[in-house]
Amino acid sequence: MGTYYNGLGFRYLQDTKYYRDKPIKDDLGFLPPPPAAKSYFNVPKFQLPEPDLELSHSLWDCLKKRRSIRKYSSLPITSQELSNLVWATQGITERIGNHMRRTAPSAGALYPFETYLYLNNVEDFERGIYHLHVASFSLEQLKRGNFSEELAQAALGQQMVARAAVVFIWSAVPLRCMVKYRNRGIRYIFLDLGHVCQNLQLATTALGMGSCPIGAFFDDELNEILELDGIDETVVYMNPVGKL
Ligand SMILES: Cc1cc2nc3c(=O)[nH]c(=O)nc-3n(C[C@H](O)[C@H](O)[C@H](O)COP(=O)(O)O)c2cc1C
Image (cartoon, rainbow, N blue to C red; front, side, top):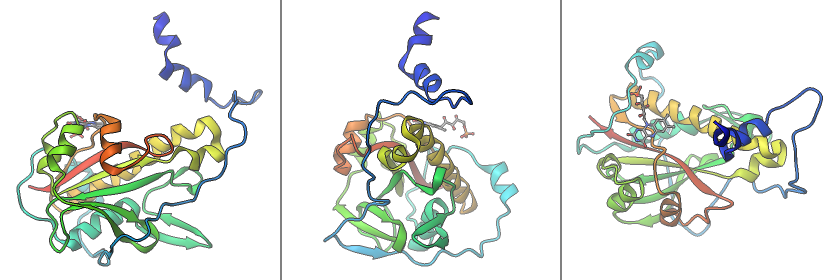
């Protein structure tokens, strides 16, 4: 048990607890506030259609049916369906000044993550890797081409990634929430993305599709594919989606 108590993960949880009578240990010094969201310039940008929010699936039904599904058919996803899935994860539901409140909660409304999409089989979209520009509900095209096998290999060979019509990949941008919450902020990245991913799973259930959260991957292989430095921004979660 000695090693367990001294391990990195255990110490992180203990050392980032709030106490009434003492502050959290903090040797971080000044942290420069980064931009609140990422934008790519000089890349093709594609507006997503408005989401169709008239679908009549009850929340209770979706909660009951939700499962992690790892086998998908080769049917394409329509751009309307893609729009609904993206909206479920990060759709803007309220604007207050510069703040954009979304379908998923985030500690301090800081949203310390970015969403990337590998569109493998989506009608009206060229196959490739895209970044979600949340404010304009549009996709920035980063790379054209077939990355199915490369992504699956980076995800420890999990073939559901290669078979999916769309793969959601989320990165963490730690500084965005560490400026406010310091070391405790790292906790909130994972909590925030849990909400985002659950929204996606419920949305795929509502649309009769399958999806599966993935936490097992070679981080820097994914970072390399997305051209992230793996330091100020690093991949933390994925979720392939496909029709049944
Ligand atoms: C954080 C997290 C990481 C996961 N990573 C993987 C993964 O890498 N591969 C996989 O096949 N399933 C993965 N899963 C799915 C779980 O295996 C699944 O949620 C669990 O077996 C319960 O099944 P259910 O989601 O159908 O209720 C992950 C789930 C979570 C929440």
